[in-house]
Image 1: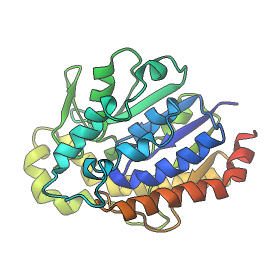
Image 2 (image 1 turned 90 degrees about the vertical axis):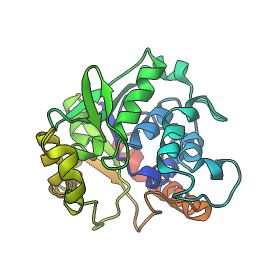
Image 3 (image 1 turned 45 degrees about the vertical axis):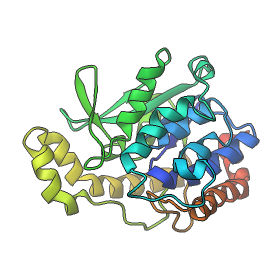
Length: 282
C-alpha cells in the first residue's frame, strides 16, 4: 500500500508542521511520496532528508536564528527574509543535504501556480541545486509581496493559490491513502484575495486573466477542498493533522510565539501517533 504525505504552506505558521514532522522523524515514519506547496515545500524537503530541527530553525526570522527573542517585521524586510529562507539557508548554519535528497528515492513534488494558465503544475528536481531552490522559491511567491518567478519560459506564483493542500495530486500519483498536514484550525477563515482586488487588478487582470480569476476564487477552492477532505477522512482515505487552535501569525517575529506553535505541533503529533500508525498499518 502506497501512502503519501501532503503539506500545506502558511509562511511561519508552518512551524506547527515542523513540530508534527519532527515527532514523526523520531518514530521513523516514512512516506514514499511527498508533495508540498509554498512553505510546505521546505517542510517536504527536510522530511525527505530526515534533518530533524532544521525546518524549525530556517522558518524563523534570521535575527531569531542568531539568538534574538524578536525580529522586526518591517525593518528586517519580508523580501530579504524570503531570500534567506529559499537560498541562503541551504548553505547556512544548518545546510541542506542536497546529496541525500537527490538520492533518497522518495518522490517529492512541489506545487506551483502558472500565471499563463491559472492552473497548478507540479515539479520534481533531483539534479540541480539551483533549479530545486528556484522551484521552491516560485511556490512561495505570494502575489503582492514577492515577484513572480520564471521557469522554463513560463511564470509562476505561490502554489497555494490553486492547490492549497495537494492531497489530490498524491492520489493522482498512485497513493492509496494520504496523510495531510494543514496549518489551519477547524473553522479558520483563510485569506480572501478579493479584499485586495484594487491592488491585484492592475497587476494581473489584463496580462494574466486566468491567474487573476484563480486568485478571486481561492476562498471557494479552500471551502471545497476542506469539505472534500472531511468526506475522504470519514471514508478512511485521508488522515488530517491540523492545529486545534490558532497558531502564530503568518509573519510571526516573536520567539515565544514561534516556540509555542512548534511545541503545539510536536505534542499533537505525539498524542495522535497511534492514529497515524493505525492509518498507515504499521
